[in-house]
Image (cartoon, rainbow, N blue to C red; front, side, top):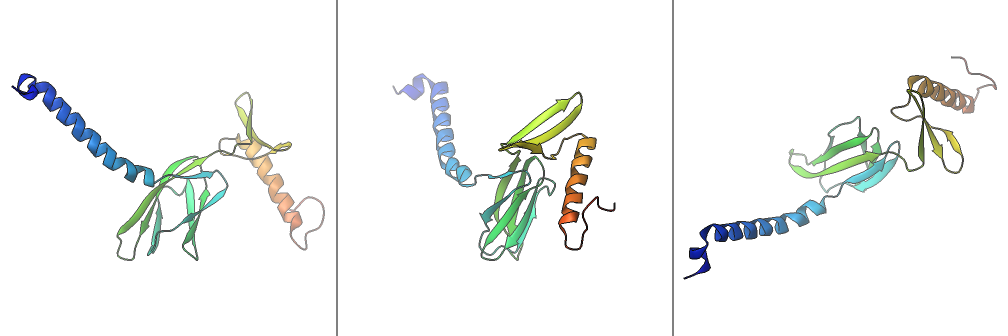
Length: 165
């Protein structure tokens, strides 16, 4: 008498487990082939565009932005924290590829809390103000205004002193 006849429930379980393992083994290379594009907030990353791509769709443009460049490359810019996807389409609308984009914070990022108010700094080599999503409106606005005033002064034809705002 065979083991399957003696233990019918367990033989079905073994068959089911074996089938599941075979399916997982064949699916894993596909899943690992599509790694996420990791981008740091407010930075860009270069990636390859699939051949014959005519349209690139960004799942959530508040998280990432994509700019197609000559030579089959794209620039992926981190706009907000989170994960979104990119879909490459050919001229007929056929999906050529889909890839995740994960946007994270910078490694030199230091956050200071003063009660409920939040301030961000970049600390390599010295700590300097850095506006980041989630900072308190007063800190964000003041830092942004200082940056805009400084940039205005750097433009040709601008005089020293406070800019006219």
